Length: 212
Image (cartoon, rainbow, N blue to C red; front, side, top):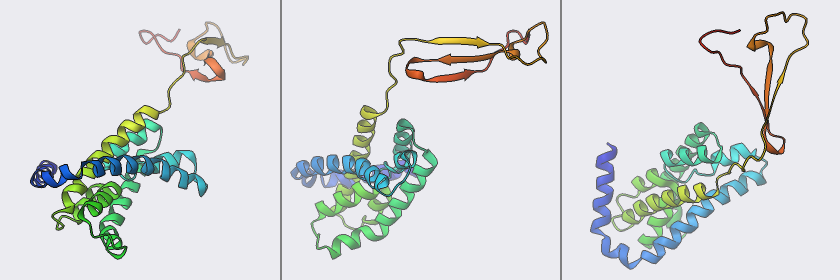
């Protein structure tokens, strides 16, 4: 059903293309701000309440659709399973309470309502306001643009491995008396030490299934 759903969103946006064109600046600004605040705001709040960095990263992309959010979480070193849950909860909250809260706050402008719901609660929120004919296209646009901007923002700021200037590999034979000749690969401990003290243990391999 994803294909027909995307087509229906496209038709709705095309029908309201003149309204979208007249509010193009609002779409760009709202999407850009929502993308940045969605990531940074969630991370800052998580840090303020004492959530671990790994969990904070996993929660950061909660305002975009699940496939994109999982990609962002993996890119930044988060836990995709937690990200998927956070995205679902965010979407459900936006779908059930987003439009109501905007109405109670006095926001009746369809552009504002659509951009707010789509940017904050992605597909579920967008589906919830499908009856608002003028707001629905803006919600779909916000959902798409915020997701795209978030992916690009995350890719530009993901952790980068530094250039490795030195690499030292040491072979250490254990002092256990159980080791007898002939020596085998499993009798050695292999450890690779990279720049800045980063190290990892290596597992010896086998050649032609011959351990000697």
